[in-house]
Amino acid sequence: MKLVVAVIKPFKFEACLRALAALPVHELIHSEARGYGRQKDHLQEYHNDRFAVAFLPKVRLEFHVEQEHLAAAIEALCGACRTGRQGDGKIWVLDARVGQAQAVGA
Image (cartoon, rainbow, N blue to C red; front, side, top):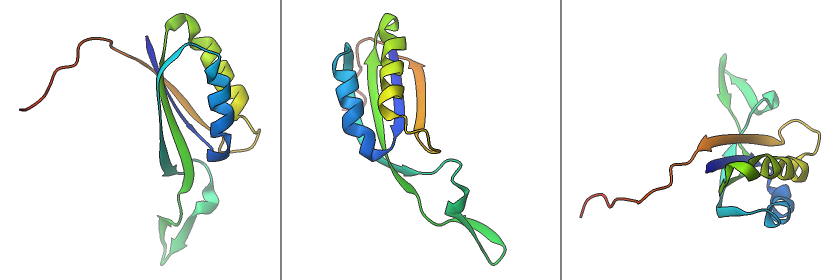
């Protein structure tokens, strides 16, 4: 089982959900995120000190997928999210350990 984490543009969120609906993905979670990558115009100089002026809105998707469906899930995600411009997003694939959760504290 793999954990796929993707950070995408917000207006592509619905297209990504439609693309992933046909695949056996498990436990899809989304959240709002803010940040920037190589958009250098979002950095300005202020008294010779560079600082971030604005973070761009993004959506973070996380879901589990079986190893045999991983390539299809990534291909569907890329096809739905790609605009061909800078800042389309990033995809990370991590090993997911499936097991029993343990309560902490109490």
